[in-house]
Amino acid sequence: LHDSKQQAIDSSASMAALELEKRQQELERLKILYQAKTETLECHLMSLRKELAESQKSCEDLKLRLKHQESLQEANSVNRVSGLCIKCAQQEAVLAKTHANVHMQTIERLTKER
Image (tube, rainbow, N blue to C red; front, side, top):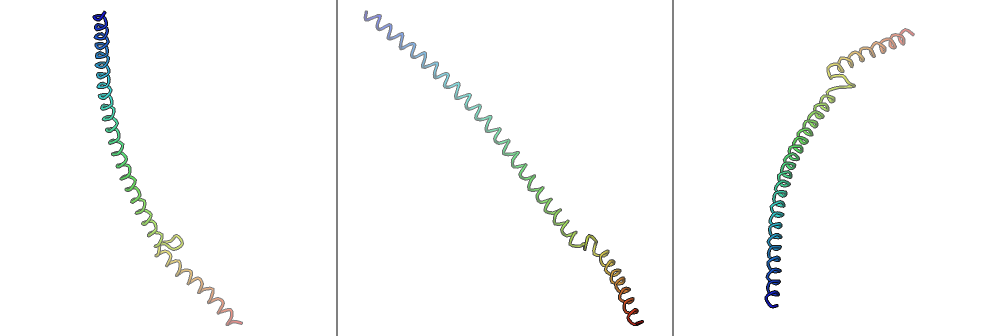
């Protein structure tokens, strides 16, 4: 009776040892899978960070270009009067003054004639 109990205990201990070994192997396998997944995700994260940095740089470059174009457009519009370049606006002003002088001369002539 004592031997059969001892055999049962030894058998249970042996089964427990096998179960422990199985669980340790499974744990090791899960650690390896976790490590591989972590490395994959870290690589993906690094790639996304690189893309983000490139996109941010591109965005900053485009902002600078837009600002430059706006300043050129602003400077161009400063050199224009009513949509005309300065030279054309000056010529128009001279013509307008001459035209106004014609009216003034006509008024003065009519006044004198009266």
